[in-house]
Image (cartoon, rainbow, N blue to C red; front, side, top):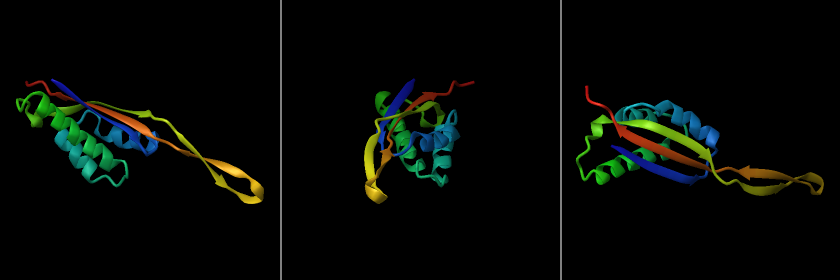
Length: 115
């Protein structure tokens, strides 16, 4: 059984989030949450809440029949969202652009096959 969760329009660069996402790809949920808890990156906190949301979706979808200990991060992808364009005034009447990037993060959790 698979469960998904989406985090859209996160006001952070996709490049910064993808480094954190690479740390937990393919890991069991418990190990992934421990890694995110001790990662000193700003992107770790929103990704941690996203994983917890996907676990809650899995238990709700299966009406409590899923074993949370067997869940692992099957896929996690980071896509670029819309960019807000702003301008900062500079010297001699000029302006420089500021690009405030957003990201979409999608995670899929699946049950590990029992051996």
